[in-house]
Image (cartoon, rainbow, N blue to C red; front, side, top):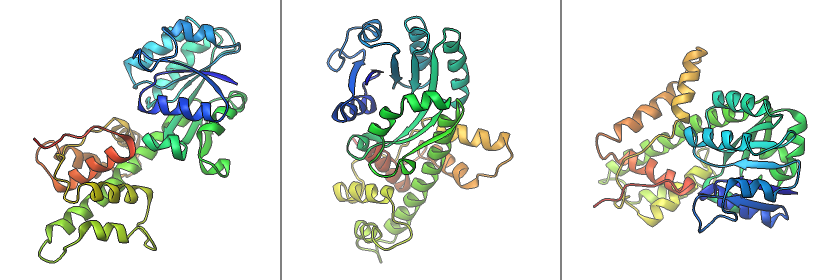
Amino acid sequence: MHIGIVGLGKMGANMRTRLRDAGIEVTGYDRNPDVTDVATTADLVAALPEPRLVWIMVPAGEITDSVVTELSGLLSDGDLVIDGGNSRFTEDFKHGEELATKGINFIDAGVSGGVWGLKNGYGLMVGGKQDQVDRAMPVFDALRPEGPRDEGFVHAGEIGAGHYAKMVHNGIEYALMQAYAEGYELLEKRDDLIHNVPGIFKAWQRGTVVRSWLLELLVRALEHDPDLGDIEGFVEDSGEGRWTIEEAIANAVPVPTISASIFARFVSRQEDSPAMKAVAALRNQFGGHAVKKVD
């Protein structure tokens, strides 16, 4: 199998490597000449055998829109485009319709795993027609973690379902990180009583009901910087959390925990909160997201 990837940033480049390690031929395009395999998107399309399969891994919004539009003019009837970025699910409807006018198929893929996906594999949530999902299954199998397929991959439904599932996943992620962060701040506050905050979190990794991969990443961050003194408590939100709340409102589903975690991030932009230092450190650990360093 031969696949094209548009976008070779942190995630895209690692996905290219993982696919190649699995024996899948990959041609990648990126505007950065230091990482690209070809000079233009047109060159990428020309390098692929028909029917072509192209995976988009660029930032959501206008950049994804422009790539979809460009590909719609370069690809042919029967080709397949997969959007693996963090697009809003409503954008999938638009992109699917735009490509369908040219006979081009479309799948949306929510991807989780961050900078650790190269080694551990990526959690994949996809939306699209069954025959197109089956067609791309060798790619999904190469990217997902080892083990049973249904523990790292799901065909969530029709076009839009993959990114909808990823949106909810990220809303939950916001809430989990906030809970760990608030626990960190409470422990850190009682320095008259608590003398080993990193050790407490490390001890929680075995045998406790709060153990998780996020907890392991927080331990890594604390081992590197025990009082998180090197970073500011400033945390961005990438969109999925807001979209989750908007969907909850539209469908009358109460999501107080997720909502509170989003508003807590807004607090981080007003003062240097210890809890927000913990959230910033977690985002840097799992996704390589930038942090603000203390001057």
